[in-house]
Image (tube, rainbow over all chains, first blue to last red; front, side):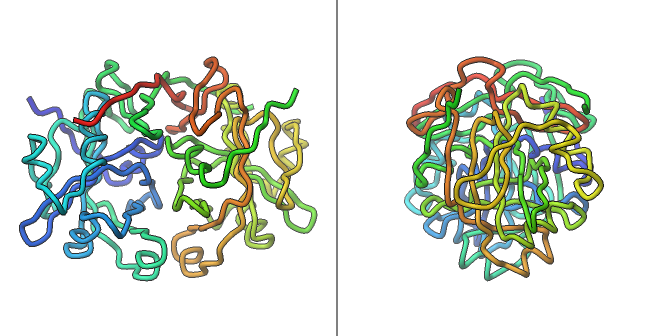
Length: 188
Length: 188
């Protein structure tokens, strides 16, 4: 069953505002890849932009430079092992989708696969900034489509229904945090 | 009692890898300010760099452009109301430290105040990138000093001793998440 619901572009930053770890998918010349990325964050609200640090030694870098597009997706806790696994292997040496039997779909507005079962998706087109890309491995992109699992995100807010459907935050060495307790404060 | 312990610069990115919300302090010509920022993330490992999105309409933008320096600090859950409060008021109209009775200390390697009682501190010097600053409100900086509350961070890992000393992740409208349960996975 498909729980994905469109997120208005002006609210897409709310998917990333709490700093979750992500998976990045991309495709160029018929070759696709998926990698893990913790260094992703919003840059602007509307039209939404985000930033991704994409090391020059990754296979995805080659694909993203070729296609000018990528998808940021937010894995749930139940996908944490998958996240670590795709983050620990080089797509230049294998087809990770096949090797790790990853269920995939297709992005809507760009040519790239998506990993099925994630909590949210942000489809992105790169805004060419050669200096940032060359000097800092930094990619700036516009978000052109966003959708999320309505069980976990609706009306601009995350509200995780159970522990398996929480977003995750990578630490290091296979250690993650789940997104934790929600709480509300008022201004002093 | 002071629980702050130096964090080796090569491990400073681990303070931010899980995407917590931050407070930013800065000072120029004897005028200081503190603001909240969720859009902060690592950019490089060693020497460590980070990025901060700093809107052109903030008072801190004026100070950081003047001084070329700022401190990123990670508030604990017990400082969430403070975080919302300083994020909801304009430093050009008041001295927030005085108005909200915020206990402050001094940074070690740059000229700026720090907010007492935070879980970690990253002192930063701006790397001038006028195009990024003008077009995207994006500041790139080198981390020149890092230290953390040893009760919550040591040996390169966060290990929150109790719920009040967890880092926090801002959603919107006064809603936060605490950093949640730690878990470990192995590669598939």
